[in-house]
Amino acid sequence: MYPIVKKEKLADRIYLMDVKAPRVAASCLPGQFVIVKIDEEGERIPLTICDYDRENGLITIVFQTVGASTERMARDLEEGDAFEDFVGPLGQPSELCLEKNLEETKKKNIVFIAGGVGTAPVYPQVKWLEEHGVKTTVIMGSRTKDLLFFVDKMEAVASDLHVTTDDGSYGFHGMGTNQLQALVDEGRTFNHCVAIGPMIMMKFVCKLTKELQIPTIVSMNPIMVDGTGMCGACRLVVGDEVKFACVDGPEFDGHKVDFDQAMARQTQYKTEEGRAKLALEEGDSHHGGCGHCGGDE
Image (tube, rainbow, N blue to C red; front, top):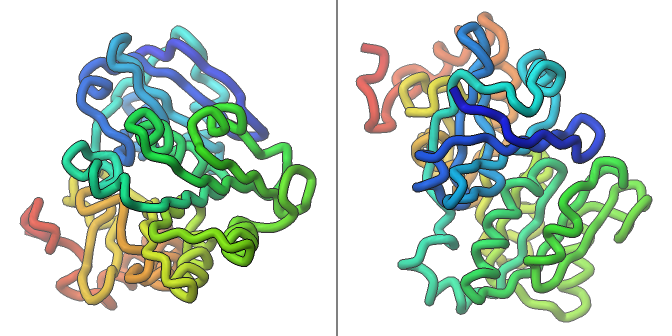
């Protein structure tokens, strides 16, 4: 069991939990994720590692209530309760946050664009970079002021923070893409972008950064089941290759991701009929090909 030592409501339908998971905390890096399970009958829920405390064996997760399982997490789990399963770290860490890449990373002029709950996975990357002497510009946005969180925490680690709201209730009036364009129009230059948020937001960030010729990394969050590449649920098309977000990602070259296919698949995969249709359309590539399992055998 993995006890919850802290629970906090950050904004409307957005919650933070600190969970005691020493083995995960000992080896995780920014960019990786965990899969949690409330109890024996609960759904497996993938959540990005928002922060970690190696000394105390704690992992911080942030989640938004979007379905029955996350509603149960928010409603039924309190400090002192525990998750039955807390599996991780899963996925590949951010290339920016690897010691072997540090000298190359220091040469980059990096802009992060976080949309909504995407602020949670952006924070540990920006924090790691700040601790290693790398300056960053961060654009974090939300639909409205009431959904913003981590403004103070992000301000403490980002070299230059810009907060946006779609409705203009706080900070810059507009979306993250509008703020990025405004900075470029002012003469700012960037040679690396990381965009994390809803798929539709990442799609339009990539559309803009492609025009601006800024290489862009996105963190993909498709439906996942096992987190090991065996189920094939998180299948993506990146360039001319089939990838699986849980083992090959979650970070990919945003200019190569087929967002339209990913969003359509996300919707279809939720129904049995949709899954059958995808299996027919995708043929041999529907499952397998990740190198971590034997396909449908």
